[in-house]
Length: 341
Image 1: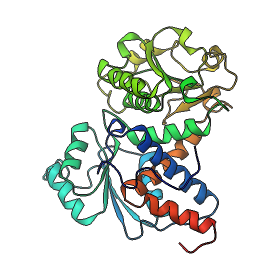
Image 2: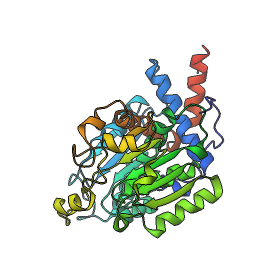
Image 3: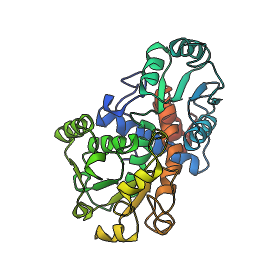
């Protein structure tokens, strides 16, 4: 990443951050740049207050660890405040419609982040809210994870290897994380492979998005159940085989479909032929199911960097959609140069 303090997009092209497909590559890179510069500045001991007295409403229809903590800490580190509206804590979808909830929160808060069960809920929140809405995850996609993931990939890129030579493989079920990883890597012109049983491959809808990205930015997108696709991988990524949206499917069914062929273990990493291959996982992980202890705790694993980069991503998103990204970068630049912000 070019460590410059000037953004191409002074303001977001969209009010809300619901889906990265709504933004071109240059705007995504602006968000990433903002996030990484803020991260480096805070890690060096710097402080910021560009969201001073601003409030973020955090709606959760599900339990959350990384999303809740990263947004709450991110707002505090930018001088603002986050309200944790935990599952069942507000009237959302009960006595009050989603649209009415959006209008009320928009009168009291400066931004809304929501982790929802159905993607339609986040769309309705955004439609009825007058303030920016950030999608903290739905059953369709996970765009905040995308930003953290691409930052992690940038942090661990092989030296002097261009984007169009980078190979990212997602192993396992076609979760919203799988779809989101495909969307962000192809938007960067990388090569994405979904390695899974044919019944679990990404849908034609998502593959169409990936192919359109490749036409515009380069790279490629493929699905396969052949272990041969592992060769040359720079990043191997997996997610749980069953979870938030699969309560109707017994664990045993998923184990039969994925184990042992699609378990990320030392043998799978060796099959890449790349001694520098990195392992990624959005977490939480079911140890010794989709990934072994030896991989998750081993030298190839960057999942813990990836988890930390959720905070990196959220600070960038909050500054950008809070309308203070360029102001924040200007302050950092001035403070580094010893000038008054």
